[in-house]
Image (cartoon, rainbow, N blue to C red; front, side):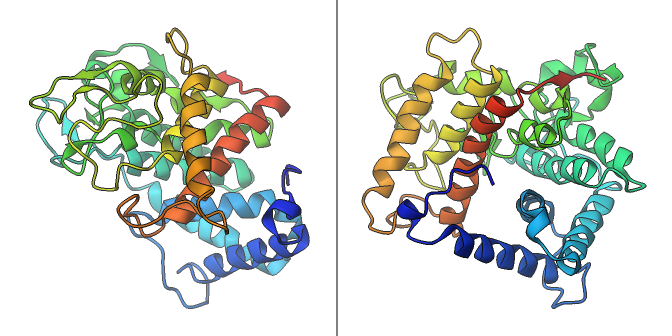
Length: 346
């Protein structure tokens, strides 16, 4: 849709690629429980994540999708968005610092629920629940990146003090994310928090301030928060390492330590939207290393895939995941050139 597709690089015509994309999008929606197909997915903890990616992809190619399949896709989006209206944001710790979900921040779940809600609100503005979806997206985004200090934060955020949006927090000061019982740099990379400016800019709307709440702090923590070994793994230091693509994992990584696309994506977003303001080395500096590492990985294989094995990345959807993240990075750059982001605190 952006004109970036190069069939000489891919080895497949643009038309064939478009046909495959549309077939996949239609099939995913057809199988959602809101439709009369096989009803094999929907309503689970990650359903909003998949409905967002399917809905977003379909929206970009909307004029190429049949009326029948548009209905399937809209049914999927509306079903998942309506479901979330009655499900509150989750918190890793309560207002007193007591564990609610030990060792597992809910930053990611809240963020991907918000993605689906703001997509629904912008894609289907005439729906009777559009405004409610938008407000619920805010109610997920703000808790997603909330820290202990925000429990006393009186700054007005979308009509009320920040603290009044919160029943706890999901990020430790000064921007550290704990997931899977470890301090986890991959979750500092905020893969589900950086897409809002793309979605809102596609329809020339302002992006809610909530979409960048504490994002600069969490990004800064990748660069500046120092971990001493011991108790942390040798050699200690910051998660981002000057002059290197390699990332330091203070307590290891259960996904693997050769994953660079998540960091490339947040670097590009930080550069595009100014989350790197005041840093000694700007986000473009770090993006060069992390994007370069991805390209080097892909050069190893004739078909251009990224990972050699599960040791590099143990996630079963690793090749699909890198496609979404690098696609997001591309769109952050492209949309900023077309329609620079404009934030609103209304």
